[in-house]
Length: 488
Image (cartoon, rainbow, N blue to C red; front, side, top):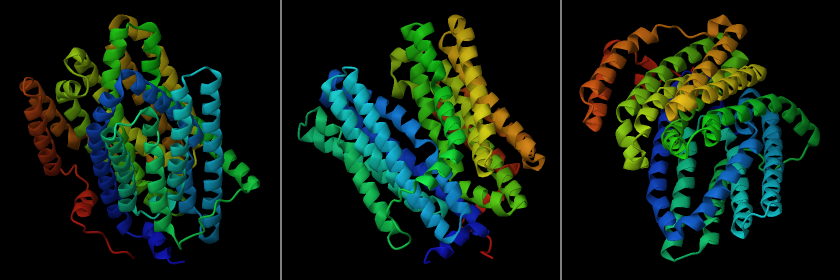
């Protein structure tokens, strides 16, 4: 087929550089998308008012839960299987994955619509759930068709499509505000974005494979048998990260819950970055897990070095600039969220490690270990939240979440060690980063009244020391300079 050369890039020395640049593109695209959202959402909230926007937010929350369950880890598992399969098996698998995605998402959306109708939700919520549900169906179908793009490291297109989605939504919202639309048309923004993304993806893949969904029930059963443990692990992971916030609504005051929620929202937004960065290298891990144990160890070690390098920088930058972040996102009335955010910021270090080791375990199909580790993290989050919140309030919840993240990272590391002790990372990166981290903390303490200046100076010191002490992997430098190893 015409794309064989592209698929073979995973077996070459160019793959690492392409993945690094792709991860940077996806992260940059995500930042631009967030800026577009920040620019358009205020127009919508002011136009709709608190009541109608409340209905819109309710529908968004319902579909977040439903689609989170029906997603079932299919996209990540689909990428892994597409990488390890060959020839016609790939096309057959992709067609069945699309068919399964359509069935699961459509069933989830229908269930959500029936639930809102039966429970007496406002008419706008019922209608909005149906409309935005169609948008979710289109979006998840597009994500499934886009599996070959990720698997072939065509990450520029992946980043472009992700940005296109938010740009389409933002433009649609602004146009609706200008024409003075009522609430109902705003639900169609996700449908418009879904149509545009799906159409562009199908054009990109035209001629490369059959794009007609397949409904092979026997194949579906085999896929579901594989995905069920991973789906449960993904669902528990989605749940535990938000568990402290849910429990606080029962055991803490409304103010403490709001303070924690403001800090959590900031961390939740930034916590997407580790998964964007690491998932760009996931196809390399999956191919290496199939063919080359030594290459898997090497790639995983380099991912660890890069994850720790970036994770420490982002975490400490957020801790130093916490006051400004809270002011921008929540306002002065949430001043108590600053200290909470500084605690939560440390979880971004473990978030990078969790993403790295999670994809490593997925590459090795260690689904049971993923599920056990996520379940233990959820138990830790619940127990510590209940124990600490009554006395420490929002800070207690932040400590509970940080501890759960650390337990999860440790659980993944233990699982990797049980699979192959040679997969454990070298600790050499830690002392190389320690001076830079210490410099960042020192600058943050010395300039508490100038957080923006402190963040800039601390970041400059961190990266200068990281380069000086060779904490920056040469692959990262070569990727920036577009100096990839030979293909053969």
